[in-house]
Image (cartoon, rainbow, N blue to C red; front, side):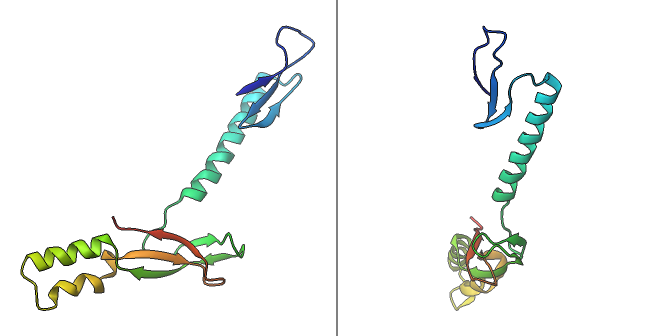
Length: 129
């Protein structure tokens, strides 16, 4: 919270700001102020959690920030660190006649890129390691 105004003068009430947004001024009751703060905190939490929701290895429904359409993402798999580690582990175990390349065919060991099917923008990625 930040306060603007003087608390010493009874005729001047502070303006209460939360995250730089005014939520109360003049004679706002304590109950009303707490309700507004709680509503604003839940709103900000909902925005942050929607932005930070991690992508997985299956398609998800999101709103594309580029074309502003609600779409189900397309997924593309690509070799990542886990793929190469499994390949090296199999090679170390003696799988030298092409068997060490099996991790490159297993989608559960590969990284995932989520793409908007409408505008082909990259919406997010899921890395195994």
